[in-house]
Length: 538
Image 1 (cartoon, rainbow, N blue to C red):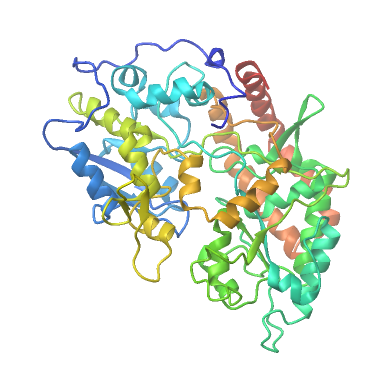
Image 2 (cartoon, one colour):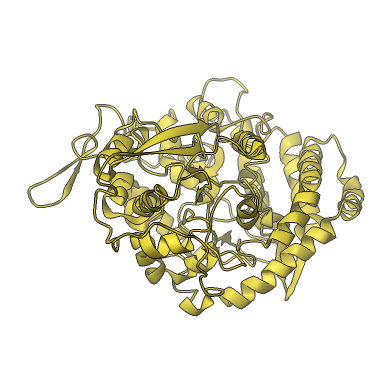
């Protein structure tokens, strides 16, 4: 599993401290149900990271099944993903009406939330009731280091990710490439020329100049779909968002530097501005979303799309080139692109060595009587065998059946792709702490895409900065500096691309970043990098 090889048990910073008093109980052994009688807990979370995910609801079969086997009923308080930090931080500021369990995604420093009386440390609760979490930590000690705050406390259990499988990258319609007589590009010049061919050669055959060669979107919460392309200029900007804008920095030659102020970043913006000016990317990239990308693909207008390449089969299924393969399971249409070479000849994708938010915190509102149950529920849904089964396969009798020989038979409504059906009933990647596991991934990933993904593994490299937790003091500096800086950066990246600000003003942009405090932020990331190196050995 990710990080388990690179990190060692001794990397875990500090010893766990007894920070939480819990009700005495017999040793918990992970067995169901989690409570002898029905217990009701309130859980506030968001709708999911993209429109393809099913917002949690007790109307969904997965959550009905989990309630049945755990004896824990969840009252869901669901907020749209994009609005979640604003809505929840407003609610937390009022310090009233807290749920029992709170998704901490993008809500700020965990230790500070605890000092404000919002959440509690989970160390003792994990020791007593985290049966499956402790099993996970034994197998993957590096993750315990990532989940442990600088003060030694664990405030929540967070998502784990697959570090190098079908991450964000461009996907190119192979039939469109065939129609224009070109092959998979390896440089920015080749990619640009391919997009020009898509624009000029009527790839959808409707005799209209309506092609939009390359589509993606760029928003404050979703920077990766654009900035991943900066790898082609030797930068490292794929990962980081929300409250951790690690994409602004990198370590090179033993020193941390702000990538936004480098000549390579100017070169990157100059290239993207050229793509925009020559009508090679979608004009609505600041307002588009997943459904809009699907619309471009459905109309045959887009020859390339930048998104999670896990979705390559769904873009293929939506394409007029799908050869009757409505589920995208058999015929590859959109192929993940090999990384474009940087000027120095390097060719890489960045591994995702981090947690992925969705931390499930237990709030101070949760009663002493219910805290053990809340911890057991978090524990079981994160790593319990039947919970992992629902994430992987859904619910027996609905989305799968067990054959006499123990193998699994997939079930889905006629005409609906199986993994999409599992997602629709609450499986796959829910908006709560869960694991991205190869076993689960392989269950629903189509063989052609898994095989193709295997050819890309040689291109992945470790990032120089890993998203370990900030101290409270560091978070205070970021809270004071980053909102203004982030707004300024996002606005100016957009203006540079649109041509509203000429690239001749890049040096002025860089100087303004310094004036607005980017060096103070860089110092925080440098301090964290030193802890990262000490704790993780890299």
